[in-house]
Image (cartoon, rainbow over all chains, first blue to last red):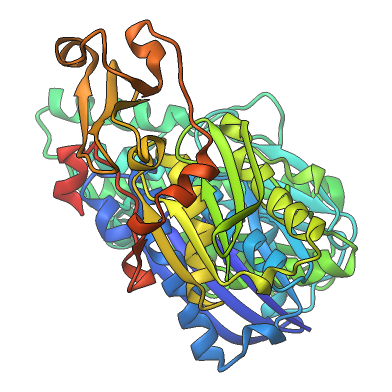
Length: 334
Length: 197
Ligand SMILES: [Zn+2]
């Protein structure tokens, strides 16, 4: 079975063509990051404009790379949400147009289901599965008791972890995207400053909005004491604090739900310290498997939508031509 | 020669089928934000009613703006996909020119923020601009025919039969030579956006 998938929920226009579950025939991503970096973040209207400019080019390139006649595609998968509405519209309409014109099934995919199932490209997934989904827009612990059955068991009360990285990077005068810049600095930083541990209402929930003010307070304190700021040590302290909060919640969720498999997903899954800590905690566990996606599958791409789409299709998921883009789509509704 | 006509640049969803020089199906309905949900089911329904298949469509004509940014992108996404992978010929038309067609009129579409997309048209020809409602009041005289959002000037809204106008404007359809270069006409250019792009 050949699936063509489209992802346009944020600042990447992406098309992938996948044969069965794991054979990638082509994977094209047109990133807008250089444009948005000039604004220090994604500007929704600009992102929508770039999607409409790029969609047909990316689609053609994917077909050419795969050396495939579009008539041979068996189904079209698309990110229905969540994401920026104007961006989602372009991908959803493109997929609907293709499904209608070539009279093939249309498969709606939740963006986070895509991130989670990126792991199916490199590993056989086992259930119950616990996914830590971390990105600029999401911080969630999602439990899959069985294949393609999603339950959110923990989520952020305020900012997403990636958002906290961007905010702290701005405070430290680092370039966008903040996650990459902080990760680099933290690797040469030392354990020198201490930031307070965050408490949340639910024990599996997250909170990151307090870290930025804690960093600001730390900077003010050091200035008052006339001490020179060691910026890489601040990056270290922040990264350590944020990632240890993630690890703490994962441990609690593992205790509560006893999963057989744990996977990382989302843009922040590229973070070197998070990858290291997950490996320290869960690699070579006897009855708990750990999968961490390769760096290319942490950021947004359409291959992950194709894999999730393939599995969704096996479970009977289909959409008709009235499929709406949904900026706040819930994963439990899939 | 079967032509699919689409206009989603303003509040209506407009879908039409023109066989050679005759309209064989048309719909024009106020849909606002439902356009992207309704458009493909409507095209599909229209074709089925006439026992036609999607690949019977030979060419497609759309409005490329000005109008709602999201709205313009709806028809344009469909046109871009059909133009690139299905190799259909794509034509574009100004939304204001389409509204005016053969009439001598002032065409107005709400551009939000106390502004309007404005074109003074005569015999299919005019120039599209974005102007403030205050400037507009100074230009428009009582005996001017207004097409479009007349309510911006406390007149009646006045919308034409848009599919009929597509046909009337046929000589003015602009053929898109490179589908990859097709972009909406936004008019409301924010200088900040421009500097970034
Ligand atoms: Zn993502």
